[in-house]
Image (cartoon, rainbow, N blue to C red; front, side, top):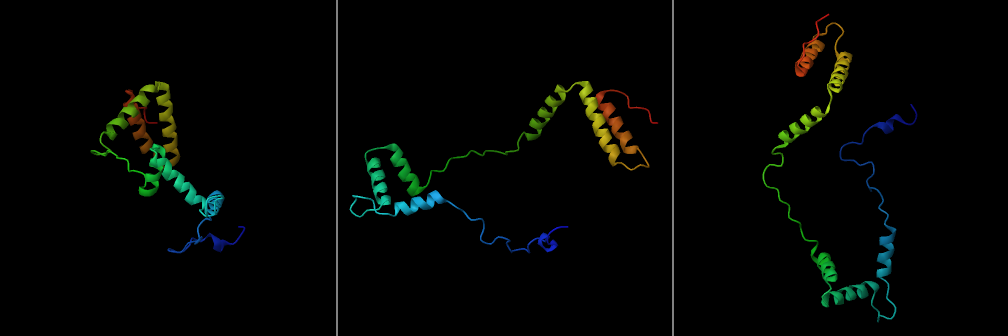
Length: 155
């Protein structure tokens, strides 16, 4: 094994392997914050942030709905949206799943169903003990009953 096996142990509970977390680099935001704090030219000592805020306020005072919306969202937060959660969210789930299963089975031909049964039987044969075939026999019987035919004779 390459590397140091000690590095493969998990951290103890309550201890982080990266206590500072991932560094969040937001270069555009950092630059905008820096520029907004600078003095705007020809604005009597006001910063860009003050000039922009004043312009937004003036637009809102003239009835600009977008400016009003921006101001209220900034000051009060976006309005909460109502969500209707009446009754049990799982109500009727089993019936819907049964309808889906039935549609899927109806779409399969008899040959496709037989092929799926053979695939499942093969999977089970790989898992069953070598000394007996009772689980396989039970599955063959159930498969045959589901298809409306007779189960194969035991060997």
